[in-house]
Length: 578
Picture: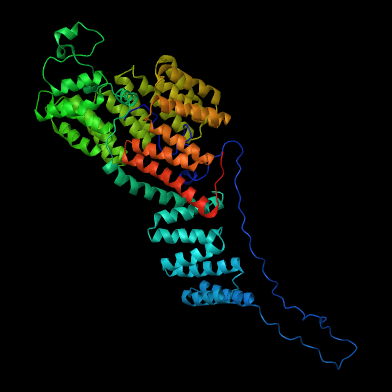
């Protein structure tokens, strides 16, 4: 696992993820926590008491006329609406008794009796009949009646939500999402049931679209910044080391700072030369030449090719190469352990934690002195919320490589997470002190400043967090991710939307393949109400996604934004904006 970005479980502490309201359960507002409230007009109920006929006083017994008979007023005929209400009330009794067919008959009678101009009452009768159809699981009829109810009363939450659930049963995900989006907006994102349904449908849609898109996507090489950051997370990775002196030509040995010229016709050594030149697009083809020739460096070529397959998001092509290296018992143990680490990380991206754990454990068994195994397994344990085990792995990594600044920073982060989730102020203070020690001991470790900044943001020490991000940028001015985090900090700290967006735009300028920047920009544009621009940003991030799981998440965000545009068009409903 590359450590270019902090590793933490979804929903954990750190820089808040500015995700769509529908994706996380509530809209994110800057400043005052205002919400839009929508009201719907209901017709008042008629007075059910009988009235005295017009022009006649209420009959009062005459005490002075004992023989006078009391006058009984004539029975007032029920109006059409009252007859409809009576039929509805009768239907409600059948409904409560579980007699749904009889209830449907009564609601149908109420619909036929109700005057057309009584739109709210009529919508209620359709919604009630839909509820009875729902009990009989006749979902098409539920949709039809709820549609009638919504046509009569466009902001009828019960009808919209019932139709959303029926669409879910009919596997009409898009229609379900639009209805539940309208419900969430009308309810001010306060109802857990509607939020859960929205989240469920978004995830299903995202997985469905990502599965098809990822399978047919064009491979895309990440930016040089991302590739260098990825390889920097390994210290015992043979394939990422520079060409050895004996691998270079005599002429090249005397040329410092110039690209190496290999002395033998080896595809792998040529690929290593391209690595040094940052000419990454040619590496896979050169490694393939070495593999097909079954050359001296076949194991190294397989591993390097697999690594770049992973970097371009082609895990299906990477796995056979990794499998082959792992099975080569005569190969250098460092190569096999590295292959296990990378396959284990791949499994974790594919949400197969058991297989991932098995690979990391096997790597530790065959190469117990390999610090990379413990560093990357520690990150896996953080993702699995196994913080104590993560700390133990980072400790072992540090024991093997005391100069591993990255492992020490990650250990501090794990300790901070444990303290934060346990709401232990003393442990939080100790963890923050640990970060101070790390950046003092390793002042050139940008990761230490970045992780410390996240912890400080959690503690609302925004000014100091901002300073840490500045230190990060000074050390790695081409790290786009840091600019995104600093931009988010401006929004949370000062509600400075312009500065935040400027910093995220700067990130895209530095690295136009930074999917995190496009995703963040998209979620902010959603909050601003610029849905078309948000959708454009999400689509750019989708094309850059490095895994199917990441792509599914981005599709969920994009679909949520698109659903809001449809709801705005159909019902004139919009969520709160920044």
